[in-house]
Amino acid sequence: MIAQTPILQLSAVCKRYGLGTAVETEVLHDISLRLEPAEFVALRGPSGSGKSTLLNIVGLLEPPTSGGLVLEGQRIDELDDARLTELRGRTIGFVFQYHHLLPAFTALENVLLPLMLAQGVLLPQDETLGRQLLASVGLDQALAKRPGELSGGMQQRVALARALARKPRLILADEPTGNLDSASAEEVFALLRRFNKEHGSACLIVTHDASLADRCARTTDLVDGRLAPAQARAISRR
Amino acid sequence: MVRMEGYMSVGRFALASDSVLIGRELAEDLGLKVGDKLRVSTGARAQVLTVTGLFDMGGREVNRRRIFIGLRMAQALLDLPGQVSAIDLSVADLFAANAVADPLRRQTGLWVESWMQTNAGLLNALSNQDVSNKLIRGFVVAIVALGISSVLVVTVVQKQREIGILRAMGAGRARIMRIFLFQGALMGVLGSALGVLLAYGLLALFSHFYKTPEGGAMYQAELDPALALAASVLACAVGVLSALMPARRAARMDPVEAIRA
Image (cartoon, rainbow over all chains, first blue to last red; front, side):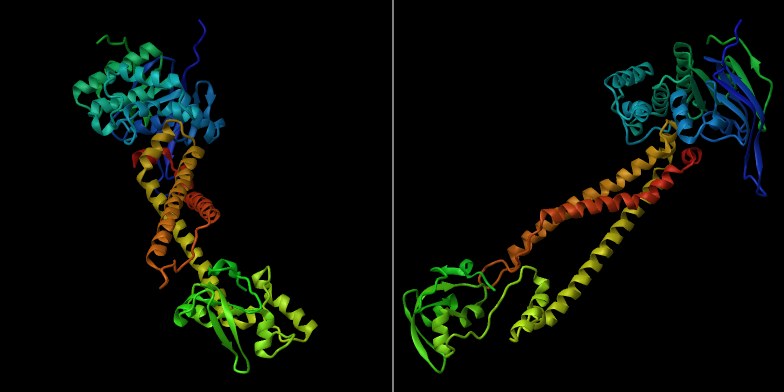
């Protein structure tokens, strides 16, 4: 059997802040992690364990202090800022804990934003795609609404649709349900799971919700900046 | 030097040997109309002339004190046959008057004086006014630049999170920079458009309210469209330049810090 090229591979990644100062802190120690295409992985850990920092590094939002990161077969230490930005836009879809939608834009405009940024202009088929994405998260009635007019769960579903606009191969979700009531949290999780299956996007979900993590194909625990051995399990059908 | 044809209210600016042109006010004061006779006396000589036209040069005193008669009649009345007391010359370049006057003086030996020498005080005042004008414009440009720059600095701080989100969604540093440069240019263009409209409005207002006693406009001010366009282009350039610093700041923002903000 031919080994699959991983979508993401981290090798001995360290992250230190305050380099060369008296308060130099290492928040990530020797992290090695591999994510296969279409994998659905939970990254679990208590507050302050370095989950968000790791997600930012994986999301190419900040560089590791040392170690290697290969995304879609591309070593990121070889890329300049412009190419990192291009790779990030093309490969990764972000879902943040607080939706982070642009308040002045409508739900549809927010969803179309990554396409607009990538292409410089919107093509006629883009709007159709945006409408389909919003319909797929159950928001076909809220296209013209601004984030302020939507509930927390709806905002997060718009953010999910936005993350999928460029059909990314990797979705990074930082506590996507952390700010939602249980019904909305369940909806958002189900949508993530559905997109993972339908589009084959790998998902790395940061959470400290054990029940949610348990329903992922694999759980990786991060404690004090170190990864505990991975636990694989059969995917829950719930 | 005045082109009198444009100031004639009755008749033409043409002088026969016995005709005289007088101002409107003088005609009223003396109860004269075109065709009437006027006795013109210089002290030494006098002559009865026919009023063939009335002029209005825009000033009451000028209209009262000045009359026009033929050259030969004037020479006869002033007892200066074949002579003139003064010749006015107009020059193509207003501020080259000295350069025309000096060689004329040397070549003719006559008493030649340019308007710049006659009105040295006025020239000085005009030059001072020009300097103040440039200073004021310079300060206005500096204030506009500071205004646009500080508004954009505040915008960059306020929009930190949005900048971070755009960066995470795939917007490069150059694009973020372009957004703020564009905003600076837009502020310049909108500001100048508003300024030009205001200038036209104020000019119309001034010429409506400030009138000469005769009811004419006191100021013959006009806004040259080329000047309005130049001001708009300058404002746009100032907008872009003022936006440079805030735009660089936005572009260099760390997306993680920006999103956390």
